[in-house]
Length: 248
Length: 294
Ligand SMILES: Nc1ncnc2c1ncn2[C@@H]1O[C@H](COP(=O)(O)OP(=O)(O)O)[C@@H](O)[C@H]1O
Ligand SMILES: [Mg+2]
Image (cartoon, rainbow over all chains, first blue to last red; front, top):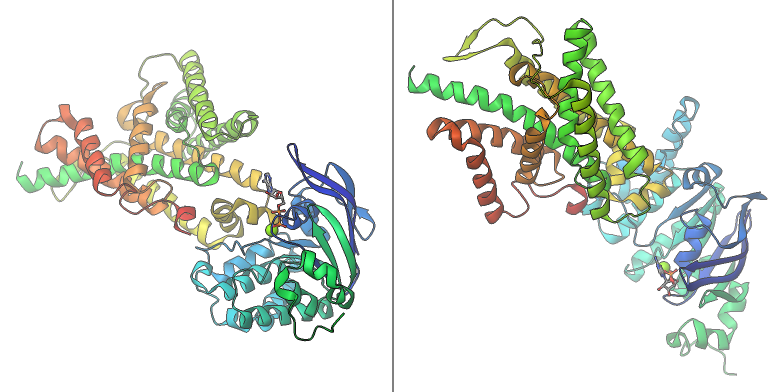
């Protein structure tokens, strides 16, 4: 589905990504883990065309995407939910969702868009009750739902989710992740960027660990969870004292 | 003339100039919301609107119904050119550099207008024949009614556009959060260009309807543009409703101030009140634009 091949990126002299390769298959949820500043957001910006890579390629179903405008990528089915939600605060929930479908204005798409409105409201019931409310007045969890719903209105085949659990209470995070788990069943693969490794690996099949701009480890969710060194080094010390941990 | 009659006369003339300030202020807001720059060529859009009407109505002899949309289209086109050839092309994204580009464009436009139309004042025929009308003691012409009506119509169209069309909402989205808008596949550059076109159209409209009263000239819009800028600041820079309220208030203040004291101080009164309001409410009467309210 989506493949990133040996991508390099620099902010001026600062090297932010180094030969990063990863792939997301059809129907998969793939986690991209890493500490703050590891380069996760930068990688998503390269994938979704906001930044152009210095070297390497981004492909969707074999077609090279880099060099194209963000609007072309959205049409191709690659849609990003930005870090920090970034909803259009003064606009209503419904208007936010409608803007998500901005690239689907054709007459023949009108019915599909109408169906997707219902699909999004089914997926996020709290939004259905707040259609007319300004998105900026919603709670953090609800705003995350608006941001995800807005992206789903573009009918993505791969959804790029940047730290959806950031700043949310554990219960709300759970709710969001449970919805993420349902997306592959609706024809949408997910690249889930998280610092919250435990949460992300509970819904992902596979994962990559990014440190200082390069992929340090990749494997199945269980492999990452069971790698003690990896946990200590990259996923943060708080995971060392997990009671389910077997003694070495 | 009784005091009441005089008052209604001042209100009528205040609303007339206030409408022009409101249109100019809306132009400033449109471009500010899309780019965060102050477009110093807004006044030249007004001048060109008047000059085009002079040429199309007078020299070319076109009917007003054709001349007005044509003048608006030409100036909207000039707005697009300003964005496409200068503002959007600049290597720098520095706000001060971009503002300076609009200052330079304004000087250039004024030079060209002077070459083409000369320095003299040009009489522009009114949209319908001048017959004195009377209402509540105020004497006015049909042109006053055209000004109020066309301004009101422009405002209604803008409200509809921004609240009920996808393109209008996309423009607001770009103003609120350009990065998130780009991620939805909205072409932010196209929306910026569209706001220059709309600002040009509003300027043209203002120039086209006021010059039958003031006469047209290569720099007739400069002071009106400045007043429009003041009106936008007064209402809360970037706020559409503020631009309308600010424009009408400024027009009324000038006219009532001139009536109460002397017309010599007309411009001074308005600016003193502006300064006082900003002293008490630095963000203007209604606060700043949409993106600052998030
Ligand atoms: N616009 C930028 N300009 C310069 N450096 C940046 C910019 N954005 C991010 N960086 C740097 O790139 C590195 C990766 O940042 P980022 O991709 O945001 O990390 P993450 O999303 O994993 O927290 C950091 O060192 C950060 O300081
Ligand atoms: Mg990040």
